[in-house]
Length: 372
Ligand code: PLP
Image (tube, rainbow, N blue to C red; front, side, top):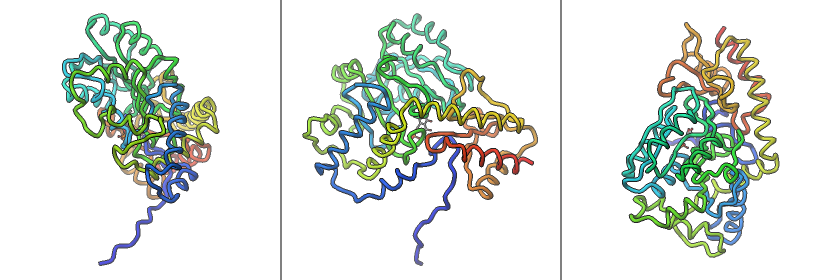
């Protein structure tokens, strides 16, 4: 039996990620593979590092792209920084906060959970209370943009609390990076991770990560070895150190890194503030149309993510049938509800290259037809 080459039908990706990849990023991916210690590749990696620093708004020397998706960026933070017995305040207002808690437990840390309702942001008051009640806590971990609900939390206020209580902050920026304001140095974030496949308009599979000098000091002072060989940043540092003498740790995903370089270059060319404004403007357009269709948002206006619009599925509408019709008739993907919102909500993404007027128009017209 011969197997034909795979030719996927192009889709418009307006779910919770992966999102539409910029055509120039796809072209970058197809450039000839070179060795990952080739001087031209090493020079490009220096640029990738500088571009990630720009996207995160940080001067942290420890700024890298982990060769794996956002979940590996999350694990990178927990396996390197949290030691057995360390107490971590973990904020849980959706799926990914719970995943952070599981990471804490797996590395032998003690998780103190601060719960908020699905669709609500992390409560700064509850976190302040938890920090007061647990003066021995070493970390505060939270999700900036909770992709399971579409809620944006106040990372600046939460990190200010962490600094006041002298705990290190660990921030999930998988969905926020490139889509909403995020200032790692100004806000005093200690450890942050993101993903390539959302507002960066890149292919999935890479995770930008940055550690502050305080986080690096905690890593260097560990009493126990990092329990993961692959994610042990004391070993990876030799490759990313930027000393010009990169040494082999693992085979870098060369072509994916070309793609990340191009996506971050495009972000820099557009300018971060302009990218944030574009996401906001497209959200406003989408919101106006969704209002007309009678679709109600799950998250209160003040805490809504422009890049992820979560709406209640109206009574009597067949969730799966609508999403299947969007895909089959319009090649348009929107996201199903996740966790507590499964079967109850749709998640409409406007992430990166997908945050364009033509996408908004297509989505609204297609939804109107399939819901009629
Ligand atoms: N954190 C958040 C907020 C996410 O939205 C996701 C993925 O959707 C992840 C972590 C995990 O990233 P990945 O699926 O790239 O492993």
